[in-house]
Amino acid sequence: ENMPRCMKTVIKNQDKLFNMLTSMSPAEMRKLEGLKTIAVTTNGMNLARLLPGLKKAGVDLLNVSLDSLVPAKFEFIVRRKGFHKVMEGIDKAIKMGYNPVKVNCVVMRGLNEDELLDFVALTERKPLDVRFIEYMPFDGNKWNFKKMVSYAEMLDRIKQQWPSLETLPGDETGTAKAFRVPGFQGQLGFITSMSDHFCGSCNRLRITADGNLKVCLFGNSEVSLRDCLRSGASDEELLQIIGAAVGRKKKQHAGMFNISQMKNRPMILIEKLFAQLRYAHRPVDRLRPTSLRGLCSHSSILGCFKPRQQNIRKCHHQSGGGPDSSDGPENPQFPNQDQTSDHLTHTDAQGKAAMVNVGDKAVTRRTATASARVILGPKAFKLVRANQLSKGDALAVAQLAGIMGAKQTSSLIPLCHPLPLDHATVTMELQEEGHLAMVMATCQTTGRTGVEMEALTAVSVAALALYDMCKAVSRDIVITDIKLLSKTGGQRGDFQRTS
Image (cartoon, rainbow, N blue to C red; front, side, top):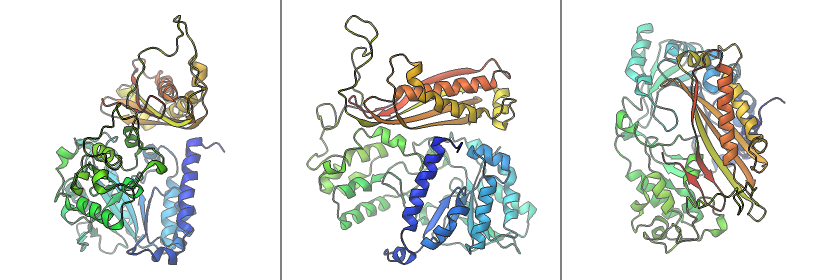
């Protein structure tokens, strides 16, 4: 009952996905041509509850993401309790016959590299395949080379404890280097994406939640299969597009120092991309069948494969658009990205404050994302990270304060319209470099006016709450860089901050 609304929404959507999967019988699933294995990757929180249904639906393999075996550290990493639930789910999976159960652990220096031997020890009496993953750079995780623990270093530490560690034969298209301690039930492996690439033999393809094909996790180019399907592309045309993407895949990635500088969105965060697509949400009935030439803006299929933002934007052109078609203000079908007003809207003809009349505006889905930085200083940062403040969990309190602030925006900002929020999320990320906390808030509504103020209020209140939780430790805390990052919806079009 006391669960935050955002948590309830996640669980509700997870159950919807689960129901969709379990609605098909194993026999029906196996009728799908080419389907050999059904695997699920999970954080394990609800695994014990969902396992019977997943097993019945025909799920063959389980991958559980688990970065710590210390309950307090686990809670710090995932921002919620539940370590015992994850372990319960793993044990139940073993009892139900899953062998092995794969456990994925991203190893980060200064956080969990001291648990390497504990993870290996788990394989002694349990049929687990523990896979240590080198820390990889993605947008949003503030990648730092110093945090990366290489495969060679991890292997050396483990061999010091178990000198008889033996190498296991690997799959020619596998991504992990496999090992086993003689006499142990399970095994371990290393996914060496950074220090020893395996691009030449990797046969993985990924489709993101918003319908884009990625042939390489490190690649920053994508092609929108969703738009191709909506535009009426045939199976043969889809195969050509996918084949061209695979054909352009590099033998190896650009190296750890180069790829860390590339723009590459996290696989789980697709809203950043939506904010960049000014007309990504056109109704399906407005999409006409198009040829590949009109779809991709070049006569060659290879023309589809541009860096992410560019290629998807081109794939939204309608038939006959050609490479020179405009999506700027001259083309009213695609609204300008930044149609700002030349005058203040909250003042009347006499320059006095006035509330804007939004009664004639269309009801649309609107989102906004804002951020703020709280520079805590070394002492406060250390206590917040260890959750040792006398007032309690500062990050959890600040997160809730931000959500409450978003809901009270119209009471705090005089001329702001009261809005029914569909959803509000606030996240807090600690960054050791600079001893700061990055606050991010995203608000969503379906209405006649935007939620920029709600998002900005959320990060402001969350930052203030964090200050309040830490002020007994330091009065030198600085709140800075409160800004709008993006917005979607509304007659003035979408906005995406580029710097």
